[in-house]
Amino acid sequence: MPWFLRKLSHGGLLILGVTFISFSLMVWFGPDQTYTLIGKNATTEQIAEVREQLGYNQSFVVRYGHYLADLFTFNLGASNSSGESVNRILQKTIPVTLALMLPGFILGNLLGIALALLATGKKDQWTDRLITGFSVTGMSISFLVVIIFLQVLLCTPYGLNLFPVRGWQVSGLASYLYYVTVPTLSLIFITVGYNTRFFRAVFVEEAGKDHIRTARAYGASTMTILWRHVLKNSLVPIITRFMYTIPLVVISGSLLIESYFGIPGIGKATFDAVTSGDQPVLKAVVGLTAVAFIVIQLFTDFIYKLVDPRIA
Amino acid sequence: MATEILARRKMRISRSGLTGLVIVIFFFLLAVAVWAGWAGQNWSAADGERWASPGSTWWFGTNQLGQDIFERAVYSVRTAFEIGIVVSLLSTALGAALGAVAGWRSNTLADGTVLWLAGVLDSIPFYLFVAAVAFALQGLPWAMHVAMIATFWTATARLARAEVMKIKSREFVLSARAIGLPSWLILMRHVLPNTLHILLIQASISFVAAIKTEVILSFLGLGVQDGVSWGLMLAESTQEVLAGHFNNFLAASIMLFLLLLGFNLLSDALQDSFDPKQAAL
Image (cartoon, rainbow over all chains, first blue to last red; front, side, top):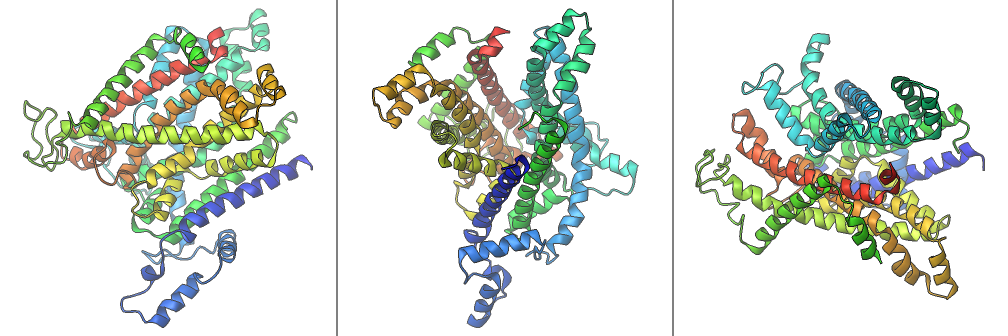
């Protein structure tokens, strides 16, 4: 089978898997939605009608098929609690989440790469030990602790009181910076430890290879070696990590940050859906993010193949 | 044989690893004291005044409800160890079993299925998966544990699979095959014991992940249902810090940090002493 067909079928199987799991957990084994949708004192006929609409009288395979079809045609229904269509909720919340999470995500990665390069250049010296110690410390602090700490430090009269305690009223660059700073700092703080450690391992391995020794023997400076040889040759693992962690950091991070700071993004919408048992929202978010993640993976693989024919 | 490997390697554990070990043992003894009923038993009684300062009666002060923060923080050590032990043991065991089968029968349907399942579980953002499991198992106090075990095994399985694939072509395995030992016996007696170092590291990594995850999930309302944990204490403290009361927050976050740091240092030291490439540098 040609390479891209094999990749494509692999991705297709993964998509079947994630949709199967989200369907089983939230629709098949999930709580019965009949009484959520129906008013008090419903007649037997009304109950039967709702059950028919929900497809409760059909077999697993048929309902799974419907679920797949709905997911891929973006026919996602309406939220149980607000009655708003799920498409509308997604359109409204996703831009907020991206604006909120991307600066921290990008800065956290850049800072991690910079610190890791520095540590690699000074490997086994005190700079390296300091950076390694710093990243282990960062990994030992809970996300929640970081958020609470920064909130107290920057947003309350007990600290510097510079930024809002919570909320999101963005109408321009100034107000954007006003609301985005504390969440961004939290995200950087929490990701930089893991990033530094990962990138350091990648760079140290690259720096131990023969071509680096050759470059050194020819008298290239540490700066040149790090920049031109180590960093450039590590681009594949860097991009892979970037692509693979986007959905995890953005989705999981936004769930906590948005529910904590009361920011109306996709994480807050998901959190509300979890607490109120809002099945249409929850199954759309879980299904779509998992599918999006696999599509991103496939896309990354194709790009690599175009760039570097050695990759099989 | 495995213990022999461990004993030989133990010589090289670093000073920071030793610090980590001491911290972990200290917390473990604390957890034992709570299990035995010697400490932390008074965690739920609301018999103090609200937000009392630390002193001889209330060592760490009291919270919004007048509960003793010291008792709660100490009892939470037990909660953390219960979650950590259950999740790390079961997820490592599951990962080892599935990874060993996949590696032993590499490039067969069984192998493909394990890899596919791991790929599928890794593709669902973790907190969403937990949310989905919690939604499916409404009210069940074990939803959090189930979700963590169901996702944490994948990394262990991949590593165990790769290691088993390497080991199965070594001479001692070939000789065991040649004298006609059944596959399961070779796996149990000769292959898996040689992956023990990987499993040990993975268990310590999942322990850390489980405790950190509990904190986030308890804050989101998906975690510990009854009892007390550092996550629940932090969730309480989010209200208190805005009113200027930091005792609850400090007690929970410092204890959480120390335990996580201990485990991270320990698992780093284990990794270093087992990784021949690192040791050579």
